[in-house]
Amino acid sequence: MKTYHDIAGDGGSGILEQVAEQRARITDALAGVRHLVAIGSGKGGVGKSTLTLLLAGALRARGLRIAILDADFNGPSQARMAGVRGAVFVPGIQKVALPRTADGVGVFSMGSLIPESEALDFQSEARGESHTWRATREFALLGEILRSFEWGPLDVLMFDLPPGAERTVQYADFLGPFDQAQGRPRVSFVLVTIPSEVARGVVARSVAALSKGPNRVLGYVENMSGYYCRDCNAIKPLFDSPESGGLGIPCLGAVPFDPELARHCDLGIPFGTLRETPVRQALDQIAQRLLDGLKEPRQ
Amino acid sequence: MKFLCIPCDTPMKLQTVGPPERGSLSVVYSCPECGYEIAMLTNAAETQVVQSLGVRIGVADGPANTSTSGCPFSAMIPPAPEARPEPAGGPAPIRWTAAAEARLANVPEFVRPMARTGIERFAREKGALEVDERILDAAREFFGM
Image (cartoon, rainbow over all chains, first blue to last red):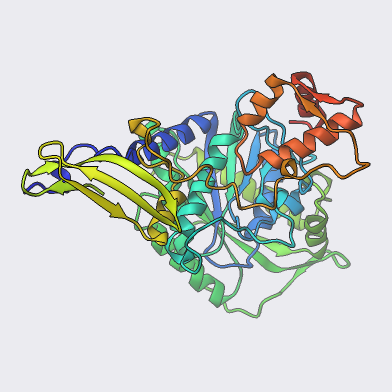
């Protein structure tokens, strides 16, 4: 008796062909993007979204063409922080133009489509069983977004990932193969942690999970590494955490918490208006190390 | 998923896909050798998994087969403004030229209502009662895209 692999084709369902066609269209959509950078962690609440936006601003200030895809569909925050909550989506000849921040960073965020008072919902006959299909649907949505918007030409497309070590790996799986097949740079990861053993432990799991596949992790950023006191222009400790041995990947830098910066993000004030402080300097250094890492030969 | 006619040791071919009924699909396969038919009946979760991929079952075989769904995202955002009637005394409706509508059709369904509303607002602010490609290009320039 024949087995699955003895049979060519799928008997006419066409599902495999459609999935392959979807992926090919994503590859085409990203053809003008030099680098894909995913900002993840595994841990929630460590400042992935804030760092994504600030690093995008720092890269943009260097004259690079940058866009952000807020991949945290269930907790989108880029729309507010980037000031594109009321964005108008303008159809182009074939695709939708990308809303932009005041300093020219392209941003797609579900927060531009769904009010903060509402949750992302999908029509479904299978209520009560969303655990069986929800992740699949969210990745289909990601694919639809990638195919539908005008991304390129770009120097860096940054993905602001949702929390969860398993989600981080799913994004690696989803985004990685396109680059391998086309010989283009595959997605590079930057992980964000804070100086807490709990957070480091979770991020270490993400590092371990990513290391099981052919993934590229540029390094990690330690966020909230002390806080910046504007009154005395000094960095003071925020966490009473013992020195840790790191995460076994390069440290791209440490960013102190800055209440003024947090206010900027809440109000959607662009990076270019930030004053020269140790926090901004730290972000600039990390942006440079990120670029240096992207230039290095692939592992 | 593939189906095999065991007596003929022959892969079965998809014949028809019934429309979803209470979350269930009826997908009929037949053996090209002996003509034996079977029906695969999905439960709601199985139907949903296929819909979640954003694909249509049997689409490669032509329009005779019924799709599992339209746009998988059509119901994930609040009711489309285009479906809401203009309130009495509200602003005059904005017309769309065929070319502008064609551009709008390229926008994924989950963004389309927002796109339509935003563009119409922009057109009104410009004193236009019709959205054409010139308005779309002007909007693009205005919003710095």
